[in-house]
Length: 489
Image 1 (tube, rainbow, N blue to C red):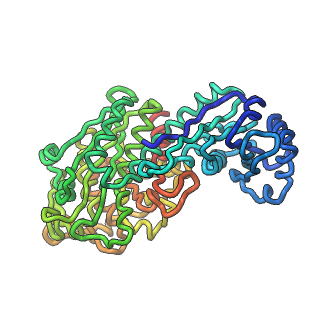
Image 2 (image 1 turned 135 degrees about the vertical axis):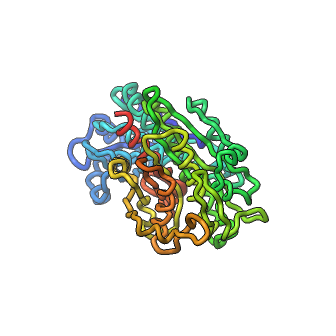
C-alpha cells in the first residue's frame, strides 16, 4: 500500500526546535499567553510569531486553520506554520489542525509543537490522513518525504495513545489505495490477493472461486461477471478477537472492480471513474485491517463480492432471469443495476454461514443518492432503529456525513416482475430507495441490517477536510467506532 507519513513522538525541548529543518508547525491559542517553547521561538524569530498573532490575518483564521511565515530569521527551518487551535480543542478541531499541517508539509518533513494540547492522537490522525498521496503510477521524482515529529512532554505515552489512531489511519489509507487503483491493476484476482495478504496481520482470509459460487447457487452474482475475463470471487475475512463462540457482526461490500454498465452500457463521459465501483468492498477491507492492527476485542466478519461488469458475447442481457442463492428469481431489466445482484447473494451467504448479530452492507449503489444527498452524506437505510441510531451516532462522532432515508412496503410494488419473483430496478422515481427495498428481500426475518449507499462520498469531485482529491475512505472511521462502541464496550 502507499507509504504512510512516518510519525515520531519526541521530547519537547528547545534544542529540537532550533535544529529543526523543513517546517515547524506551532499550535497556538486564539488569544492569551502562549507556551514556553512558543515564546522561545518567538524570540529566536525576532518577534515574528507575536506580530503575526496581532495581525488581521490571524484574527480571520478559524480553529484548525493556519498561516505561513517563510524563512524565519534565527531558525534553520524553511517556514513557521502557525495553526490556530483552542487549548480545549474538540476532536474535529484537532483533526482539522493536523490536516492543515499535513496538507502544507513539504518533502523535508515537519516538527509539530503542540504545547498544552491534549489531543495529540487526533492531531496525528488528521496529519496522516491529509498527507496521504497516491503516487503508485507516477514516474517522476520519487524522493521520500521526511517524517513528522510531534513534540510531547511524555513521548512514550503520547505514542502509545496515538497507536490506535494510526491503525485507523492505515485502514482508511488502505481503502483509499484500493479505490484509487485503475481497473487494469486492481482486477478481481489482484483484489483478492491483496486481501489474502492480510493473513499476516492475524485475519483469517479465504477466497471462494467461481466453482465454489456455482455450488452455492450464487446465480445473481455470477450473472454480473459472466461477460468479463476476470473471474468472479467472494472473499471472506474473519477477525475473532472477542469472546470465543460469540456470533460475529457482519460487514458486506460490493466489489465491482470496473462497471461499464454491461449491455446497458454507460455513457463514455466519466466512465473512467467506475474504477471506484468497488468502494464498498474497499471500506470493508479497510475496517478489517484496522480491527486486526488494533487487536479489536470483537468478532467481525467481512465479506466482499468481487466481479467486473463488462459487455461481451457471454454477458448478461436485459430480460435475462437469474436465480439467487436464496432461491428467488430476478428479472434483469438493466444490467447497470448490477451491484444489488452481487450483494443479494453475498448478504444471503453471510447470514446463512455465520448467523451474525447484525449486518451492514456498503455499496456505491445508485446515482440517485447523489441527486438526493450530494457528496456530503451517504444514504442510510435500515430495518432496525437501535442499530441505525448507533451507526448515525458513530458517523457523527467521526465527522462522516450520513443521513437516514425512508423505506416502506409501498415501494415494493415498483419491483414487481411479470415473469420472475422481482425485477432488479424499479424505474427512476425513488431509485435509491427501491434499490434498498430490493436488498431488504435478502435479509432474514429479525436480522438487524443497514444498507449504506456511498456513491456520493467514496470519490467526491474535490478534496475534503481530511483527504486530498480522490478516494476518501469514507466509512472506515464510522464503522470502526461503531464496533468499538457496541461490541467492545
